[in-house]
Length: 484
Image (tube, rainbow, N blue to C red):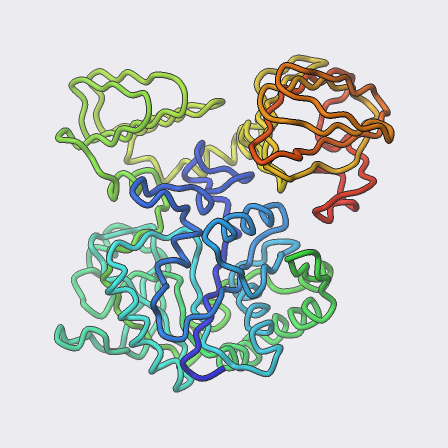
């Protein structure tokens, strides 16, 4: 691997709670297609916008265990085979994540450039973005730690700022500048002052450096991270397409960002100004800002009618939304929750989600539609001792061979063909046919066909949660886990 090689490291462990109810812990914003033009998810776009960069390699992905199959499936959809999908047993912020990625990248004796990217950013001017990255390679190959500072367009209080030692001349806007200091999220008055000085840019959280360069600086400024990251990698377990970090060692890593661990202390920091229509989509208002709006500045998606309304974000997944005389509102409808918020308060949605979770509202963390490696299921209706689900199984996919201690199940095929295994006996069922799975029966559901299998499942029993699953065989390495 030469100095021209560049490995994207995509961090996709966030929960995106400020875009609730669309984004939740079970399926956060990086896995959603928020750009209606491309129909690609934010995660997919994060890699695909890099295509054409000289020396571009397949990415290293960092995610949590619960999202591993979503990540793998989304890269399969764009015909990309990641170098590694590294599973964090617990979130420890960006410094440990970057450390394990760098250790993984040099494990075969190579020393590539690492391009650190969050999985949930939008960038409008992809050509400019790639040109700035190309400029950054020069500095990174010299051992510098490059970050990309976003040229401010407003006095944002939701971002940190980077102060350069000098300002860029317009005709040399892609020159790297030495970093003087990082500034935490300012108040409104301070932000107003900062954006008037061209030395200041927003902290994007994107970086470019050689793997050896960041590891050397981490060894100096955060040696505990290096120590425990190395152990977590050395004791990792390869599980199908995933690398499981050894949990106990990784948990000992300090929970700290790369900014605080290294960038605020090193004398190797370089900032490259970036003016490419960047957004981290950190709130519903920021999504409204970049969305295509009608003549009344309303963004409308789904079954929406709005009269005498302006400056609104109105989105419906199922039910009809009718707005009359609305102004500056966010209205988002999903199949189990509705958000109504003033745009000015949209940054506080994450606080509401914390309240939901504290009060144990299931809608705080999970959607009714839950994704699994074999497909998905949607809870349609539920009672005290029963619930009804729609199950979709991908072609040639199979659920685990399993049994339940506390519930029985009725399956009714509504589309496709199902291969049913019950206590060693097999049968094929097609549309409008059904079967009964009694409590304690060892069973498996498979889709042997070339089209999606859909069935209605009616569960009944004294305990219906997903942890009432005993697995005997599984194609996805989940024997040791009771959920999924």
